[in-house]
Length: 469
Image (cartoon, rainbow, N blue to C red; front, top):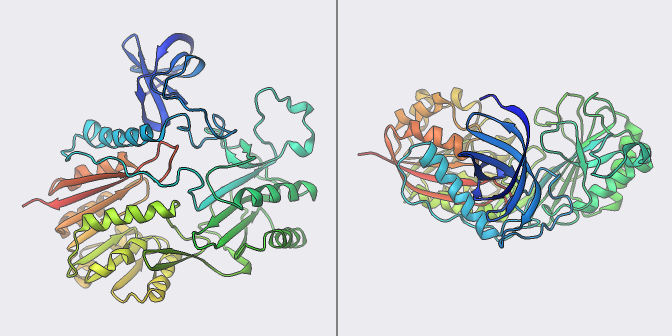
């Protein structure tokens, strides 16, 4: 739908509800108006910047009267950094908004028949809950309101932090982030200052030049700590000096890696991660199981909440100990191993070969002998001959990427006709689309939203499906 740029001021509008993508909504002249960083009950003046046939988009120019529910944001970067948009919203209202988001996607937009959607499972931690963060170096950081770029010293024009929303080449220099526990902030600040002090070129995202490019920090509840430094090109002396300095300043780092990435994007999935010091993996524990996590491994980024999420998936699977379970998009096999004690056999399939290697090693370390793991594109691996060879599934558990499942995969699932399906999704919109296909033969029997990312609009959702008799 085409959108026109406009400049219009609307005064004294009352925010009515939370909306998709972390925005809130109100109405004007019968049309919906979407704005970010608003709380239901706020009375605001809105500057309209875009107009389409059925709605307007804009930003709050002035809060005339704050909602009685409005909280003061706790982060100094709120409103500029693209994350944690719901800081002004009380946590209970966040949970209800996420439940409503699931309801809107499945019922109002997806037209699916669902039972009453359960209240969103809260996260015990609402700050410092993430176990993985990525930070980007930029030679041209985002300048704050009131800053004059020309008067800022050259050393202060660089930044290390997060991309500003909708600007691929703009990075906000982060002072303190409330997403990951110590020593994450100290490591990031040290790496920034080291690069400045030693005149290492920060990456120019638009022109693809520079030396220090980005970095990853991974933590575990067991106390392990992994740092991955990414450089645009190899300069051995500078690289080794920086890595040695990091290792000396933070002896608690248990795995220190580096990557030479000269591609046009920051993804390291197709790059070689080279161990510089320490162990190849870090370790997480969950319900007596041990999971070794490598630099490319997928692991739920809220470790404590992952236990609740997998508990819901196991409950919905309804296992008695005699079932063949297929865990599709298994990652490092966490769900597969989590349910294996109550299954006869579990088959895990995942696209990333390194993840499957991790899954196999983890199963051996955990003494699990009834799990098998296979690597490959789901639509190519999962076919009738694979099912004939490994057994028809009694239960299928799905935890796909945000895009959901391929139509060919949905058809294979329908042909296999397991008694139960458990669909775990980080994107209720694509989940609703896929469920519409599966509901050709299945009924949705339970829906449980789970909050993995407090203060954001993102929600994980688990649906139980039963084969229609």
